[in-house]
Structure formats: structure tokens, C-alpha cells
Length: 298
Figure 1 (tube, rainbow, N blue to C red):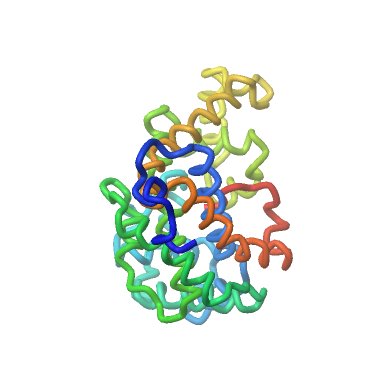
Figure 2: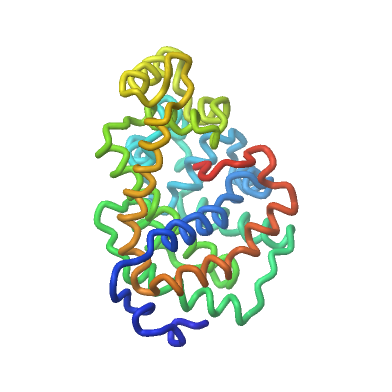
């Protein structure tokens, strides 16, 4: 189902997007992007560049598309990391410039996808690109810093990695939109992590180890979420908290409806199906076992 085979109503976005289709394609995009944070190839490529600490390497890889920005800019774009976590990346651009980090990220993605035998036929790759390319080209990047940066990166010659980079643009677009919704709902950087971990979808130990909020900061954020009635006194999520978390996701979906409008519901669902082999291959390889049930690591 190439883009030109879609009905006009699906291709041009006439009428509102079905938010279920938006949620489905958003989840598929997130899943297909996620492996880059977990595979050994990423750490290996960072080590070649001279960085063996996973935290600064993660920050450098993910922010490389923005160029050699100060760590404070990365902190602003990443939202839920503590300043102490992001400050640790200071100096990574002296070790290697952003373009080398970006190239290394592409190498890691390509190596990993071939190691687990991601299989998309040439026809399926072309079809997936016919669907995601107009989404990336037609997106409104106002306020979407990480998405805009990734959209500016020249696509690599490897067709599979090029598709993954377009997936990355869409993934970061939703992430950028999500941060706006979090701020609108008064959930600060640590508060949103407290609520997210309470759902059981993100292990608290992982969130705290990677985002580096200390005990005092975590306790203060927990108290704020409890005061809103979203957690009980034992830190267990309440019905109101579950409803609030879902409302935030729905509001994010509403933001993202415009992103997927160029291909409509049918195109969004078809794209989700086409890129599923990426997630399936890494799932079969056990890549996600340590974070099973987690929707969005980064």
C-alpha cells in the first residue's frame, strides 16, 4: 500500500484522525526505535570514540543531531533528566564532534539490526518510506527541538538505517509534544518520572539510575504527586492518577494527530505493520527483557 494507493481521504487527512490509529502508530514507532539504547553495538561504537561511560554516551548519541550544544541545551530538550545527569556529558564534543557521534549511531543501528536479522523486503522498505517520508517532510517542527534536529540529519545510504532515522524523527516529534503536555499539566521533570514509575511500566530503579534524581528530590516529587491525589500515602497509583496518566497520553495523541494526517488512519496503521519486524526481531533476540513492559525508555 504505497502512499499513492491510499484513498484520498486517508492520504490527505480529510476529517479527524482516529486517536486509536495515532496511538498504535506512535507505539510502533517507539518500539522500533527503542533498541538503540539497549544493544551492545551502541556501547561498542561509543568506546571506539573514546567514551565508555554509558550515561554520557547516551546523551551524546541522542543529542548529536542538535550539534555541539552545551549540556544545558540537552538538559532542556530531554526534560526528565536531572542537571547532574546531563552535566556529565560536558566534554563529549571534545572527544569527538557531533557528526562522528551521529555516524557512529547509524553504524550501531545498522550492525544491530543485521545481527538480529531484521528482515524487510525491498518492497516493504520502499512502502514504509512512501508512508513515513511525507510525514517527516510535512511535519510542523515549531517547538519540536529533537525532532527538528533529527529531520535535518542527512539520511545514510543504508536503506534500513535510513528508515530507522525517519522513525527516529517521528519518535522524537511525539516526545517533544509529550513534554509540552507534561508541562501544561504541571508535571515537572522528576514528578513525571514518579508518576510513570508508579504505573509499573518503567522500573523505578532504572529511572533513578539513568536520570539521577537523589533521594531528597525524589521524595519531594513524590509528595507533590501524592498531594494531587495521584498516588496514595504509600506511593501506589490511585484511580485518579491512572486517569491523569491516560489523559496526558490522550492529549499527546491529540497533538500527534496532525503529524500523521498526511497519510491518515489507513496509512498510519499500515506503517505500524510494516515496521513491526524491527521490534519483533529484537524481541526474539531478548533485547527488551530487562525493560519488559516498558513503553518508552528514553
